[in-house]
Image (cartoon, rainbow, N blue to C red; front, side, top):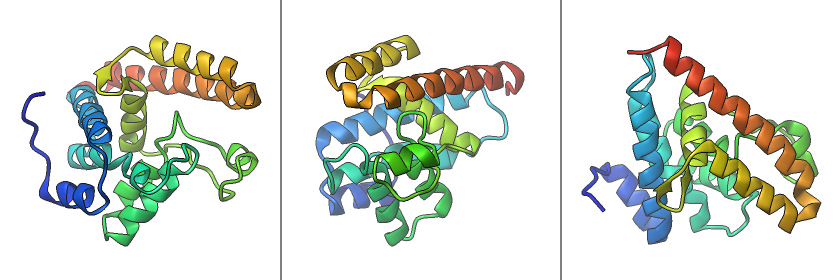
Length: 182
């Protein structure tokens, strides 16, 4: 892997919470993909995208629950004093976000976890385009969701909503790129 410039405050948080190496590599790849896309978008806060991407999965350091890692991650960042903008990138990155009804059905706090800002949407989308530390296309992500739905039929309802939302997010990012080019 090439040498990547990781900000000192990110490294300190990774170390403090003992974030596993494979998750660090994943976060670096998400950052690379997000920054590559951001080069084609004017008016985006590139620093927030970079930090948000590098810390989007910090919650995995304290939970193995896929439905809680994004909430725990945001809690960590708020506790560590990072800007709310970064905490929201982390809190809203799961899949293509979760609506209030979905969160409630999953036993999460009753609120929306949908990406709102362009930075939130970009990190969320970039995360969907990375599996492990490898970039992939949106179709591969959608196929992976289908497989999850077959293997865990109790979550088929969530898979279908997630696929729909991920397609819309991908289309939105592509539209923004084509209309807000730098």
